[in-house]
Length: 615
View 1 (spheres, rainbow, N blue to C red):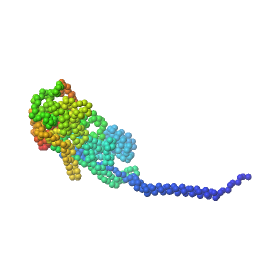
View 2 (cartoon, rainbow, N blue to C red; view 1 turned 120 degrees about the vertical axis):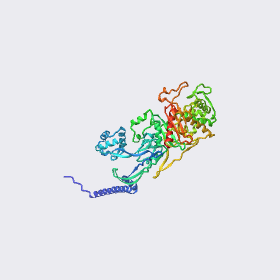
View 3 (cartoon, rainbow, N blue to C red; view 1 turned 30 degrees about the horizontal axis):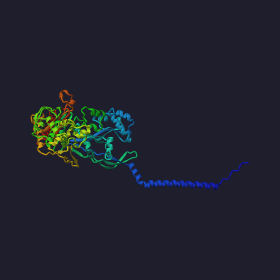
View 4 (cartoon, helix red, strand yellow; view 1 turned 45 degrees about the horizontal axis):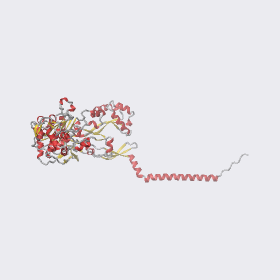
């Protein structure tokens, strides 16, 4: 007989079902409570935060880079401007095969490895619909070639952008400097908010020194974008404030004249207005085209410039350091007068060489002079007279007085790369060479040789101080700033420095008149080459500085030496002597005699400035 099945307990099942329903209701209520709390937090407590995020997903702030300020010479000639430049751009999402496109583009435009490398770096940080520049400055020929083949390159376009341009080319490269793409080091030091949307920055010269004024203030615009980030419309726009235009003290005409005069030589010419410190011309030769650096210079071209034996990238006017040679003698003579070591009337018989007491070594003169006073010692450039003067004065008093003229110090000109030269002292030699100062070193310092080093700008500044009888003005390139829509020019006030003061005013005449005699008396070192037929009075001093030492019994024979061993030729001078309006310093590397080479160059520049430009 089969087993009996137990009857169902409906009451127990009902209680189990109700218990399950209660648990389910509690769980659902708990989950609903959590959901409600979370929604309350999102909708109420965090409303402002998520509303802002939502708005940012729809509205984007874009930077508007400011137009860079222009640079003019003193007569309004444009030195640095902004002009349209055509660049090749690729929109990645419209290109099926990027490598094939790049390969075919290289057959139409001149693409170097640097262009492709930069494009690939920029590609990584862009969205597919954003255009990425491939080449920044297309030539007219490249532009025409691409226009003909445009149909072959979907996704590739030519866009016009504003780029820096230097219409004077190499003429003012060392003065203006140039702009270039912002690199990592510059990115670390600049205010990234101020440079938002800007790709270039001043690298050297005036462009670097006045970067803050030339750059301007960035603007912005609010744009509505879709979910993919594409711009739909502009909601609000705050235009950028253009950079301030600058007017320099330079005169392009004088600058080009100086370049033509120095053409074929390596060297520098600096011309100043001694009355106010304005730099009228500042030439360093050879030079380079700054436009090469604006869009990224090819490695091969940069390497050629960097390794060129004549160093076209080197700014000789500010960074070149040269022994001043005999151009220092008027200042040393003034120091001797001030310290009572010599007088204008004192006559010294020179034998063609000088010896120190209890020393047989002969310090030779460049020629025999016989009996000389201070006038003839400067005009005829007697080394022996200044050997004796330096020995009696001593290095301490001599260095201290030379320092009053700014030697051994940066002038503080508004540019970059200026070096300070070297004014040797006992303390300097002990600290640098761990050696004592020797009396013979004082002798050669007195004629501007030995450790003594100056820059061409320093020499022009010293010449200006002599011309103005001790008044010192800091050399400067900026003449003024153009402000307002009317183009009002605000002229900078001259920056006067502590003057060189002497105890007796006639001391100035006793060194400046000999500088005139250097040019206008038959035995003056620049009479035959630069002063004989001048239509105005010039005060000047020639100089020749050695680039290697000679033994006591050795003779300098220029014809037997390689060019790089020839002496440097120097000249300083100002004119008109009675009312100075221009002060000039000339240095010609390995030019030989200052009287034969450098002085005629200065005379040509003075003639152009005083006779042709003023006529």
